[in-house]
Image 1 (tube, rainbow, N blue to C red):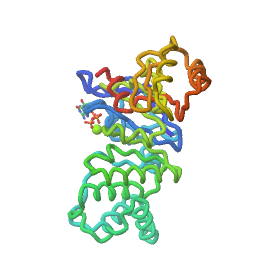
Image 2: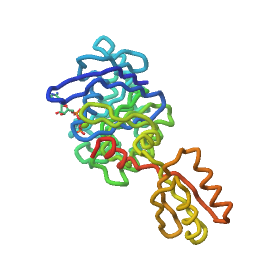
Image 3: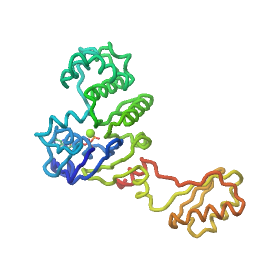
Image 4: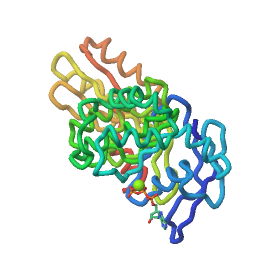
Length: 306
Ligand SMILES: Nc1ncnc2c1ncn2[C@@H]1O[C@H](COP(=O)(O)OP(=O)(O)OP(=O)(O)O)[C@@H](O)[C@H]1O
Ligand SMILES: [Mg+2]
């Protein structure tokens, strides 16, 4: 759905984006992560035809992002900026009706469409509220509803969770997953890293305009973790299991925490079943044997060398 090839926009002093290449397949949720000033919004603005790149190309659904194609691109893309203007004097209904008109949605279809987008974003009850009276979370929902009016295939949401309380973040996350299930492709940027881990099919970590890592959360975590981290949960006391682990030449730093053992495995992944087999054949009751993946926050810090 999105193809970015060697995209560069240099604002001087290393600011901007540099030789960015990434591909985001249809129907996926892509989390674009990076510290302040990394270049996330710059990338997004180029994709939405608001900035022009100096070199490289971007394609959305096979259409090149360039001034000649800007009308076509705008039909496909729904863009929610990090800060968007709202018209305080309007009611929510008037606000959405205004944007329906801007998207050339025929007057007869508008009421139905407004109700649909309010339902998707769980905002039906706000239809008669004054825009000026909306809280931050409500404004974000109405902003998302507005972004959905023309039924775009690709949603580009710049920090949709910013400023939301934990409940509103959960709701926003559920809405994003619901939209993916409706067949949309979603690109969203965020600083709230662990929030993204559960919903993103793919993540990209950007710093100083350079893409440092790209892939599924698991793939990126694996790249970051040099050794395998294993946790073993036991049904009985861990002493016997600990002895067996210590005797395995590939095991380092086994640590016991209640009925769990956490260890680093330095051998090849293929040798892990042997460790499990040695425990089971010695009569140890293993209830869980799993690899611990670094969480997104650890991955982010590691990739950006902090
Ligand atoms: N129009 C512009 N003119 C000059 N510099 C710009 C312009 N737009 C962005 N920049 C610079 O490019 C860098 C990347 O900015 P961008 O807004 O893309 O970062 P971001 O990753 O979205 O950050 P944040 O998380 O704070 O939103 C910053 O150093 C910014 O100052
Ligand atoms: Mg930004």
